[in-house]
Image (cartoon, rainbow, N blue to C red):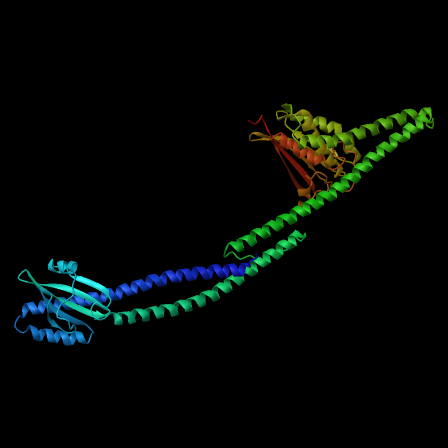
Length: 471
């Protein structure tokens, strides 16, 4: 059975309040009753002691004293009776019987000098009363006592009046509590409905929904957490969409890049088979087929290489390498490519600078970055620098090319990202996997790679590698 949150809150608040008030009412009622009767018995005991004290001091005119006390106590609805050691009544303002009715236990306590106090007595003295029995000793000898009684009707009226006030107060408090509980339940119910509605929108793929947040309680904190979750979901959805778009572009690139060399190779083979290529052109055709075959191998190896690096299947054979010699080799290998773009490669490194790395993989990283710099630089300069800082070797590749904006810098490490929609023939960058491979290889070396770039001014890649094997 479904019960709305509003009614759950209302029932819980109302139940707690009712139980609390019932407990408080019972305790308060008991306290008031106890207080009234204690006060009454204390009053009776005080008057009794005063009467006995005055009788002790004035023996001759004791009856006059008793009459005067009778007049005073009559106004307070209190009767008293004096009795001797045989329980016979000597003087009384209320009782008509000749003897005081006491049981054996009460009589023994009086003879031992103990006062007897009874807060509620029903029909023993012809009416419901509160009474006090005090012993009277003359020259250390028990000679009787005094009985003071007061009808409990007056005490009951006081207690009943207090209970009536308590009931009225309880009903007023319950009404106010019911209103406040209803208001709070409605308020929280609306907030929960907003959460449900927002959750339904997110489930339908709407990540633009947001909930107003109030930091006053846990529901407000939940709303803040919900907004944070939606923001992350929106970012994830955008990343997934971008990745899917890159994957589609990647598949299109793969199809194009593989189809072109395969078509060329197939055409050359068909021409050789049908003697459609002259003897003078056969050597050129075979050379072209060989180049296209090598290109296919590079395309396949690039993807295999990335997967091996990503799954940590690459084993690095690290050794101490003279960085100056390595940078000069890269300069020589790419000099012709740089000349085609009108670029110049400059090496800036001291001969004593060395680096601890896998020679082949570090060469792959540097060639990849340098070729990217050449690709996006025209009639400019590419500088290959090397130096040591603290316990690390720093390698910088800086160009004066077209540069990048900050948003583009964040994307260049993506697996399928390419800065421009062109299909190059870079040996490590056919599908936009180059920089992704670079970052993975630098990480495997225990190093870091960062990029600084200004649009229209150039780009600088900085690689920092440990100078020795990390523990």
